Amino acid sequence: MNDDFLFANEVPEDEEDISVGSWKVIIVDDEPEVHAVTKLALSDFVFQDKKLEFLSAYSGKEGKQLITENPDAAIVLLDVVMETDDAGLQVAKFIREEAKNQKVRIILRTGQPGQAPERQVILDYDINDYKSKTELTAQKLFTVVMSSLRAYRDIIALDNSRKGLQKIIEASADIFAAHSMEQFIDGVMQQLTSVIGCGNEQAMYITNSLMVNCESQGDVLKVIAAQGEFEKSIGLPVNQVIDPELQEAFEEAITNKSIVYRGDYLVAYCYSRFSNNSLLYVSGLPREVGGAEKTLIELFSQNVQIAYENVQLQLELEDTQRELVYRLSEALESRSTETGNHARRVALISECIGTGAGLSANDSELLRGAAPLHDVGKISIPDSILHKPGSLEDDEWEVMQSHAKQGYSILSGSNRSIIQAGALIARDHHENWDGSGYPDGRKGEDIHIFGRIVALADVYDALRHSRCYKEAWSKEQTLEFINEQKGKKFDPKLVEVLIERIEDVETIIKRYPEG
Image (cartoon, rainbow, N blue to C red; front, top):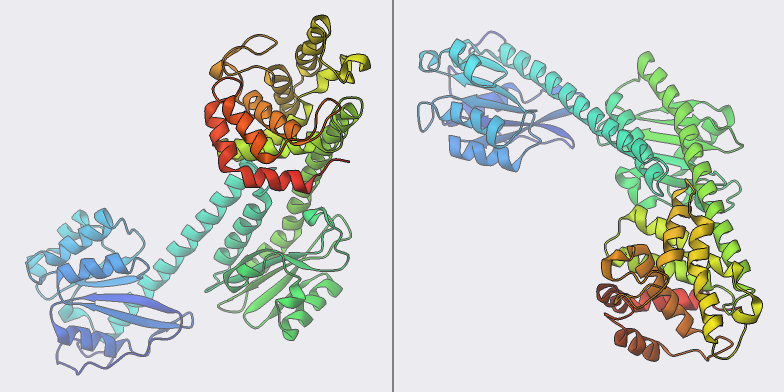
């Protein structure tokens, strides 16, 4: 059949068996026999272990619909003359300009070459090949489809590589954020699976790092990041996820500190500066992995774990800083009227309100870290005033009010964002929405949003717990007071957020009781 013209005779149409994982080929032609002969000629076509899946359209209108419904199509075999003389050209224009599909390879086939001159069509339309039906033998059709699929494969690989690189760049820009490491590893795995040409890729990053989730795991390997069918396994011990054969490959990679290649998957040992075991698993390898690809995998396995550990160390430093702030605040509470976990509760309640008020994730986290510093100025207040059970005299009240400016003075001037935020909170958390507060009589939005939020969180928590001068109030009593002070003491919008999230706030109070 190699030298016979494809479109010389009509051939009965056969049903095509579609393999799992296939290349989609859209045939757009108003002649049914063209569809039948094309399918017959390419019935045994296989590229990278995947067969062809044929989709048929018999007019330009149907072709546009198929393109829209199948944006992952690899090739369009497109007739020029159908319901109109330029129907095929309009489909080509639709694909590139309206569907915005630059990946699919368009092969224009025409039985009337003079109707659409090749030179003009190539110049005016973004097509990839132009063939006259009378010259398109079975062998030439095989050649043009093979070359188009190779081009499509490379375009997809480049696009996946670009997406993976974009994820890594985005993660690098904010690499020390709480969830950036997961995003970084996802990007690395996408890059790796793209470059080595995986299909239907499954991938996992597994570690027993003692820093993960700040919990000691011993020798337990856990899934930290995953793609494909393992995506729902994140956080689980790996021995609950994999079969015995894969477990054996994992153990071999750890024992030999090497990369194990088996069938269509690999298990790469990731080198660590600490005594941790980490592995990168990738399946769906389309062929035997070459030398260049093995070198790339080795580079990935050597650097992924180092990057992970760097970020984990940074997160550990941030957690340590936050814990030190809590300890400092609790030390201040021990000589004040507050006891126990007041500072910790105020921090978490403030974060809860801030998130509900629309603060960014970074600002909400910064607020949580800085909120415990709201009363740092009380270090300058005498015990006789701090512990006085009754009402304060005017001169005593003036001394008590000075703690806001004292706190600002202690914290201002730092280059650290958490300390800068703490200074603003210390200064503004006793200002009132209507301007009746202290120390500066600020009002409305002139009061920093952090100060407004902490003021609300501080009062709510203080009222809900007993002090030397009062008994604890119920949730209902506290909310009644907060509502009375809406628009006076408190920002009305923040009060609404507190009410919306009151159950979350009460959960925080229960989780961190006094004592």
